[in-house]
Image 1 (cartoon, rainbow, N blue to C red):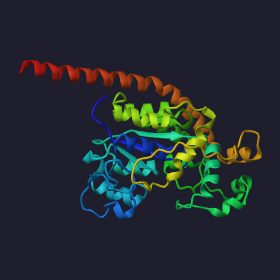
Image 2 (image 1 turned 120 degrees about the vertical axis):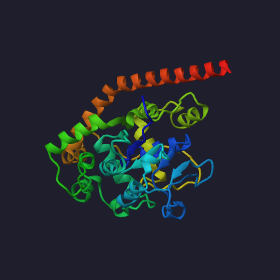
Image 3 (image 1 turned 180 degrees about the horizontal axis):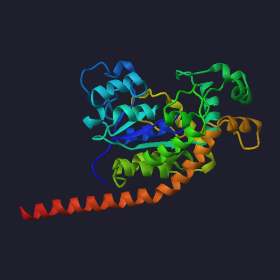
Image 4 (image 1 turned 60 degrees about the vertical axis):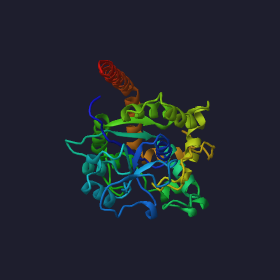
Length: 326
């Protein structure tokens, strides 16, 4: 632990990002993401941290992290150097890392990862009815997921391409996979959707969140407080994400929905699974690597947390001694 870093959360579509954002809004972390244009203040000449929805709606910085033009504006205005945001939420980690951070203002990337086939299946069923999304695709409701995966899905090897800075229309190969693995190993604190509570705990450590704080406990308990079947977590998060996955903040107060919204499972052995796994073979390999890395990082995070506690204890003791000397 040392000087505070501004954490960059890579929001991977249909992988729990909206839920994580809701948790940290609840915790009153100051977030840089995207707000509806009518309340965004993105035309202002100065960076401000404000509460667009009142005290119960979270704190935001007046930037748009969902577009490259928005991130370039944030770069020009010195977003990271300003220290106004605790957490940046972006969908283009390569571009965000290149333009918002430098040697004097470093950060760590955190993200939740989901099995590639599960993520694509969730996207298929979600966007055929999510009329609030920019990428709403009602025509998908009239086709099978096999037809969609074969003829209409252009979201292939998404993780690898995004990490190395390629467009989705670009080709990707083993060289890109090797680079992606190294970037994730060196720069990411990885989380897993099916280990979401543990993942958020690790993100809390990186953010310096005090988990003994009553407000923090309340926010964590709203999502993780009741015992749930592990097999239902993906469906549950799909429902949580239903308030929007493109960066819009639709509600004027923080509400983390926990109602399940189930859709058909695509499991190994099914032709749909086989096709999507084959067409996303690089992401499948990367995901398995991320799962291993998740286990390896546990000791690192635990050590970091212990060191932070020691520092906090030393600081508290120093303050108490100064008071006694007065």
